[in-house]
Length: 166
Image (spheres, rainbow, N blue to C red):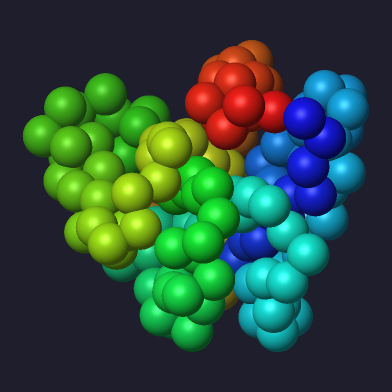
């Protein structure tokens, strides 16, 4: 089945946008029609059979995604949905922290029942951080660098497409 898919994302420093673009590109390789757009620009889900949402997670809070889910709840209930959050917790390999962040995603989507939810490791570029953000990164001893796993992102995308029957 060829579907029209929306990959909607929120981003602060570009890491999540890059992942959303990679997901869109992989879905196109699989023969799908895909629009990759910032969440705040999406006014309607009309015309889409499936939606994949992605946003950064900071200190246990997923940026913008909750508002999008509330605003488009009815439309999301009528479509196949998957979601991902991007942060540094997956880098730590701390199972408790990873589970806590996954739970934030699960709670956000509890009424929608997505086909897949996941966390991806992101990228922290000190050159793009404000003074306050650098201070926070240093205080919590957050890892700095590009931790995105493009192989895992591609594999997840293919798994989501399979689960959606695409």
